[in-house]
Length: 297
Image 1: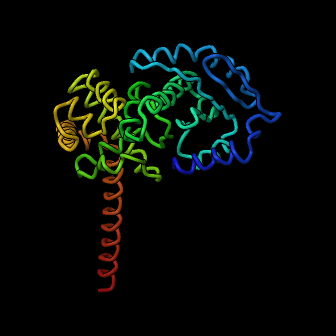
Image 2: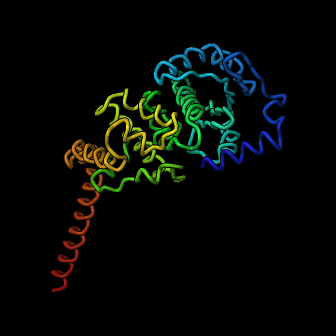
Image 3: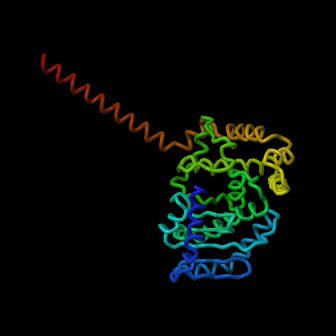
């Protein structure tokens, strides 16, 4: 998915450099951010320019690093236009760190006026992490997990259900391995959702078991030039593989068969009701056949 986004942006900025500056779009620029927006969003763009410094300052306080750059923020009111750029309908926003760029489908934010602020903070976190951690050392699962942590669990993915896929895979031990989430996430909806959930869960686990300062220490070691294995070892005194095993064990203790059944009660009851209906239908057919056989005697 990220390759599709980068490719779309290459076309947008290189082949059609004036696309984002045509007559139906406006621009606001200050010392902190440049906002390009579709004209119906002019009022919202002005509000965003006003709240951006506060969002940035809060992010700096959480991570401990300076936002010493001014990103470009692109707002789309037309969801189809956004999806053409993103190459998918599974996300409501995305960040391109190489361009210091954040693109947001504002049509998905109308239902919750506070959602935009946390989405912006989430995407801005991606830019901040990649700005300070160079050389591709930041694994995708950590990048996404930290961004969800600082934005109170908010991610850019559009969820079709609020039920956790991670809770479902814990008992079957069918996780996506961390090594498979190092460079990219899956493109299909369910595996993609699971990748986001795993990323958040692991960072939450590190924060809870080792402390937030250890998560920040991992990031600092990556910034200083360590690879992820070394950063984990220096920060947590265990290997990345050992951390993954610990985390899985923690999830298994938390998710028991009882909680699984409780979580999926409606689906289970629906299935049982359907089975009972089928059983009743079969019994009815058998009784009719029995009566028919008696009449023939």
